[in-house]
Amino acid sequence: IPNSFLLTNSLTGHVRDLKNLRKTGPWSSQVHPLKETIVLSRLRSSSLEIREKGSEILREQLDAAKNELKLKDKECERLSQVRNQLEQELEELTASLFEEAHKMVRDANVKQAASEKQLKEAQGKIDVLQAEVTALKTLVLTSTPSSPNRQLHPQLQSSGTRGSYKSHIRNKSASGAFPLSPAKKEIYRHSLNPDYELYELTKMDSILFAEFLMWKEHPSLDRSSAFLSRIYREDIGPCLSFTRSELSHLVQSAVENNSLTIEPVAMSAVPMVKASAIEYDCASTLKCALSGLSRLCKHRIKLGDKESYYYISPSSRARITAVCNFFTYIRYIQQGLVRHDAEQMFWEIMRLRREMNVAKLGFYLTDQG
Image (cartoon, rainbow, N blue to C red):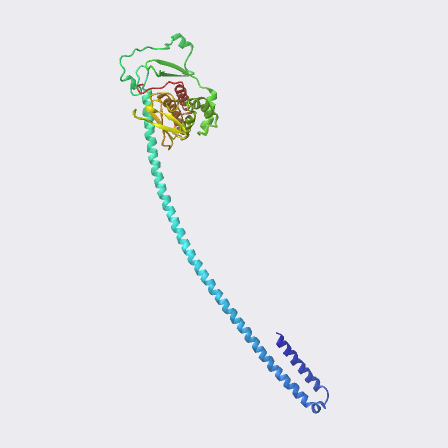
C-alpha cells in the first residue's frame, strides 16, 4: 500500500533523528530541547496517521470481502436454482421414459398376440391346403386308363358312345427285351382324344437335375441361376412371346411379380383399352390384345393395379396360365410348402415345362374339354 509505506518511512526517519539527538552528549538535552519536542510531536502525529490509514485500508478490505461474499451468495443461489430445475427435468424425463417403455411393451404384446393369431390362421390355411392337395392326389391316383375318374375328366360325363382303340400295344417279347425298371413310365391321355392312351418312358437329364439341385439349395426367383436362366430362355420367353411385344413384356413382368389377374368376361362387352400409347381394338371381344388376331375372347387380364383390361384369346390364356402354374410351383418350393423329395420336385417342374411348350405350340383345352 503506497500511503502506509510513505508514513512508515517518515516515522522511521523521525525516530532515527531522535536517537541521533540523544547521542550527541550531555549538553544535548539543554541545547536542543525544543527540537526533541518537535521530533516527538511529529512521531505521534505520524503514528496516528498510520493508524487511521490502516483502519481505512482494513475497512476497504472488509467492504470488498462483504461484496465478494454477496456475489458468492448470489452465485450459490443461482446454482441451487439450476440444480432444482435439472432435478425436476430429470424426474419428468424419467417418468416419460417409463411411460414410453410401458407403451412399447403394450404395443409389443398386442403385436405379438396379433402375430400369433395370424400364425394360427396361416397354419390352419396350410392344413386346409395340404388336405386339398392330398385329396387331389387321391383323385389323380385313382384315375386309370381303364377306369378314369370322371371328376378329373368332365368330358366323359356328357359323352355318348365313344369308339375306343388302343395305341402302342406292346409285344411281350419286345417288353421282355427292353425292361422298364431303370426308367419311369407315365400314362396320360391325349388332350384331343381322352380314349387315346400314350405310354411314355422318362429318363432324367443329369445336367438339368444338377442345375435344379444347385437352385434348390437356395431357391429364389432370380433368373441369374443356371436353372432358371435355362427355363427363361427355353420355355418362359418363347411361351410369352406374342405379336404385341410391348404388352408381352408387361404381361411377363406381372406374372413374375404375381400381380396378373385373369377373369372371364361377358360376351356383350365392347372395350377399348390403351397401353403405352398403343391402342388395341377388342371390339365385340373378337381381337386378342396379345396376338392381334380376331378371335373369340372369353377372358381378360389386368396388370397389377392398373385400371386397363386386355381381352385375350383362349390360346393366349393357355400360354399365360401355363407360365403362371410354373411360377406358382417354384414359389411354393421357395416358401418351403412342398414336402416332396428332390426327384419328385424335378419331375413336376419338367411336367410344367412341357405344359408351357405344348401351350406355345397352340394346344390347349377348351371349356368343353
